[in-house]
Length: 222
Image 1 (cartoon, helix red, strand yellow):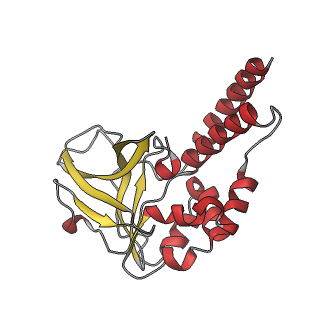
Image 2 (cartoon, rainbow, N blue to C red):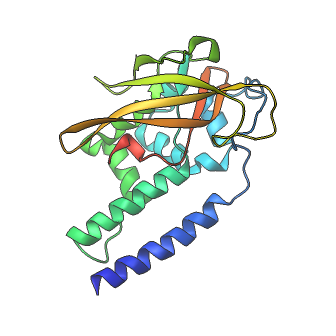
């Protein structure tokens, strides 16, 4: 019975997420003018796109707006799809271990962030680097930077491509695609995951935004 409920829940959730992911938005990975948001702060940029509706709520709950808008800050925002995947995974865990009717939804996440339960507020800062990482600062080998999370680092690099990798296939000149690499552990085994930034180098009034692919696990927890 439990397995049937879990399968039904998973199927309904996937349909909901698929509908959400299909909403029209212009954060697509296409080649864009990186200067069109220079009159907006990073927070205002996020608020102007439906792909980050849930992320903005999380930033507000965590009280991180000022840090996101700090001068010279680079932000690697996860999309709402990434957040929804995390919430669905947490829901399955509590249904398997606590109560089959329990849900770990956005209200739970916002409560955790507001009270920094299990360091959730701190963990959200792993997507923040206190340096303006424009394209001219990046290298193919990558550089390790401290993130906003204490004792945490991430490697930012780029690769030069001519097509594919989630970007528009119609461009003719080589472009640089940015990767954000963050360590994580499976048990006691250290690993590193390289996350493609589907939209890169967006210049805001206060810093730089590189939008992470939706395929990664929020907080890099496996």
